[in-house]
Length: 363
Image (tube, rainbow, N blue to C red; front, top):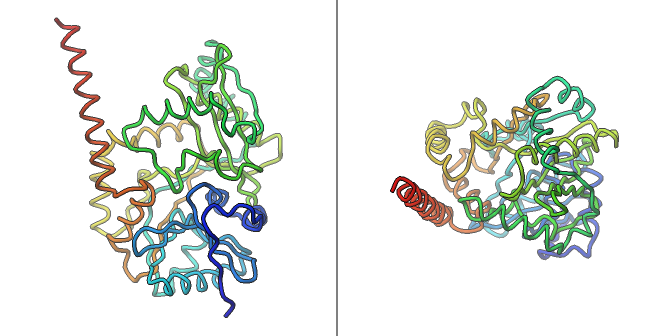
């Protein structure tokens, strides 16, 4: 068996990973393996690449291996051998249906459903807008407030102070600490050659931006990041999405997604009982830290053509709490318990400030 090579993190002088992503990237996360913080395993024949992060005794793969479909099983075997040599298990995060089906009968892998992603054919977008009065109303709200959309070469967006300010304002408005892995906010610090960058301006100031990444083997794009300043009028996010979808349609794209909606309703019923219970608690009580239901409603009101289930697949007979904990660490970049503690503290401070303000108004 040919030996594999681990590329040092940040080794982007080697273009082969990007070439493979642009040739074989089927999973919506494929281009995200070129983001900051993702390590790379490159096959000895340089015909496959895996993007992953380490969390303890786990290698968390971003989506799935990027290679020709006929090489997928062989690539999985080689990468898992690489992980075993380093005393690690493997978990494929945001894996899609084809790889789930491929590994379902192996007896050495287990899968859980972590949510779903909405999908569109961009050529149908204009008809969706024409047929939905509520969506047109949102677009008009932003337009009437003077919001205008423009395109900027992603390389010109790198280091742009206005984009940076908008990103920081957006991150400060969220209760959870900045997340990483497949929800990396610093996407413009990674490879940007093939990305799309759209800006929303009001009174000549950037108030929001959108970054989309190619899903080359599906002739489409992932809307990877949509950052909105609190100064942005209502409808700004919808206006950016509308501009992106129209751009994709003009380019002849047939696929678009906004990525994972974790714990999307009705998708997780086949999971083990212990996990269904945890997910039920998270959906009911963690909404104050991460707006699961609001995110799902926002994407659903865009009337996707369908929803694709996404999975986490570990190379163990039964999916374990340890794999779930490692996933949480990959997304948070710190201990999941510490991330929850920070969110609780920030939430308590915000609620205390709101209470004090209310008492002063009453007084």
